[in-house]
Length: 415
Image (spheres, one colour):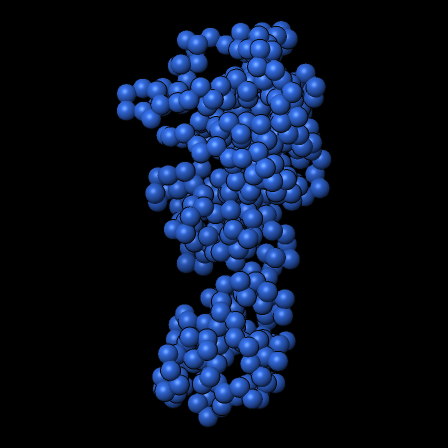
């Protein structure tokens, strides 16, 4: 399948400056810019990143631009109010962190990383006005959607700094065209106004034709808002912000009506593979086979296959009816970030004390009642009230999972 056909099938083409999508089938140089206002990308950013990876795998040469300079100003696109300015040191640290994430997402595929602080910082203000500002019409800029929304009736207004952001992005495109032969910029549709700045600038300064292409914003069908948040907040790619377990669970719980679209956008599965999953899913939706496939594939892309395997094993044991004995000791590294951990001595620490210490019971008397009522499970197996301590046969490596009732669980690390 040609690139243009694949991207169209996945629903990844929205706005373009070219009329015929087959223009994409001849590999050239493209770039995609990333904001550095945070030290991690979110799954909202991930959609465009995977679009970039698809293009690289189709033979295009990619430049990933980290916005070390533009992030100091703040992107007004998609915002109803002005961003709070970040310090230079914070932006610099964020740029380093995001570069690491980008490298993980491209998994060794060839691409170049650049930071626009390298060419925008040395650029003098008068030079910028003469070389860039002179080529932009205020009439045209004031008609941009994001400017109208912010400066029109009921809008919050816009500073000159934010208004200048689109000119900075236009200069980025010109610089990359001049120095890296870039002929296409890609991004989310909320960036379309900014993306249009570079195309006419290059035409005026270089008498050259270049293009831009946006992909649709991924929308949460439940809330109608931009996709990428849960009840707990944004879903980050950084495991310290959103743990791999929580990340996996997010994808595991997407709606039936959206899951096939997400497989197209957020995985590297082929059309044939996705259609096979879709067929099996439609035959028995209760199996949630599509969600399981989505959760595993996206987690593997972002966190690596070993982590995806561990999270999948843990999820299958806790919620899928799999044998707890199938868990590997390294899988408990995933669980330790999600469940309370209690230390115990083999053959010595009373079970009743473990339940209280792990807050599965409020007192020893309540713990005793739970045990007598057969409400306690060890590694998924109902606990015998006659048993008082943990024994060697109970261990998975050096761990034990204890559950009270349906959902309250702790990890016991046994010494």
